Length: 283
Image (cartoon, rainbow, N blue to C red; front, side):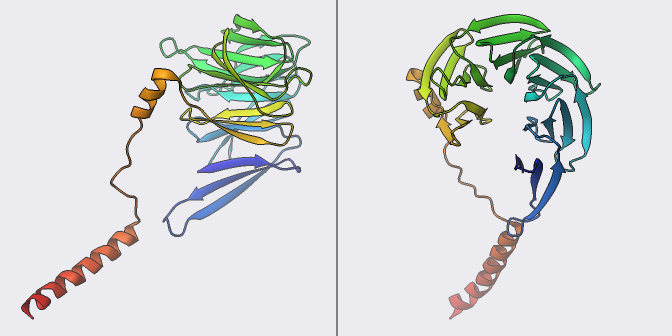
């Protein structure tokens, strides 16, 4: 288990739990220092994490904090980092209006999409299971949601305000966006069925949405805003899909998770009781 966060000294802390036994877990805390720190993003497998600071991205091994590779290409601050579903590529966007896709194996740029005079604030990635091609969705101060494939603009949606954050569900059936425009309904969370079809809108933060993440099971959405609030959203389906989702919930298991020590003590007690049982029967 690992977690990362930052403080005002640009210090990144990684907490790892080494569970040798459930009664006496051991924790290892690693510290990494950056001159300017913006954000980190763990890979889907959890064995790596990417740290963006300034216009550079460094990829680390989660358990040893060893540097795996350095990725450069942006001319300004990196605002968002995302991993491809297979963890082989990293996609980033920045204040220079550029969106780059990096190949981790060869440590080079795989594709790029550059727009001048705009700032990109967030990137999300989906992958076609048949072709293996990545589709990148970006938002920024240009009042658009853009879908990019192979360094080409695939589709886009014109908006009346700026989006600051975007998140895609694992099933790729829902897309969530967070409004960052201070002049028009800041802090709203908008759900999309696809890039051109907004489904519902929820007013949440009193300031711009600065971070937004989905849980791996697509059941919860977490949002953070300039108002200093963190919101936890439960995601449920509507209509017939809601009934199917409820029926698909697994029942509670009859088995329980216990330690080896508990099993050994239980076996010892049972052995003692079995030894006393014949004596009590004879009496």
